[in-house]
Length: 406
Image (spheres, rainbow, N blue to C red):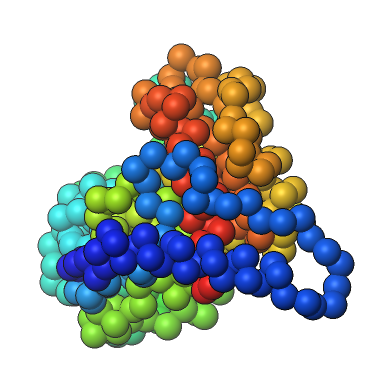
């Protein structure tokens, strides 16, 4: 992807004045309905050097295959299950990774699967792990976990062959010890285990996609392992059946920001808005939960307030809720964990709330946070400095106000 500036600073300033003037004129119009509180003049806020004009008035996106592949992986992430979709016990996320080549995929899959992916022209994919505890206590301690990779191949026949070969390559690592395992509900799945070891591997094609999983249990209980594998297939397959696969050209042509979420997300003026999974991305609630250590509470809050899109960029987050009332309610759920202690917020930003992360594990770049809301949008900004986080909060509020023309 290439990004180039399409506005000078003078033009940006002019656009800001135009947006502000439009708001004033709209406020003076004679229209029926209940009077609303007057908008503040966002030009008077202390926004530091942060931009307050929507992104599409500052930069232009040019499609590229690399950026398109990132968008394709994000699209896939929105259609890959989380552990809590399989079993309430799997309530902790252990990590997620996207891959656009076989070498990257073998950071999750076994090394022996690399040649299989090469041979069958693997395109892109996503892998994640969910478990019944936040971290594994020891290598010998049993746990319930699910590691799932969803991989796209060029066509259905290639995917079907790849699913078989992926399982076979893993099986052959210990051919004399591994045993095939049939899954009664999924006869097309290729599965195996090593008796006495509390894990089971399985692969199956779903159209042009391949699901490859490793499930573990607290003991070498084959019935429990097969049940967990079947529950994983049952949760994931319907999502893939509804997700059309992408050709390379279709990935290239994926739109940059169809819901205009990046337009409203605060970043520094020089931030390079190149799409990157887990860093600069727009997701549905299902997709964003992959980056949450314990997704249950976040899922509940988003469902209650009608959140349908979330953007992330440079440690900042933006949620789109059902309506303005829902945005206010959702904002009240943010920065409420016990690790956050109240911090003085900028007095001239309506509804803003700030806090300091007092935990011993806090990141210096995200120690301070503020939450603002405007219309149906809620944003959370972070910084390593209290003065800076207040400026970010003010700039984010101004950006949301200035983006209402969209």
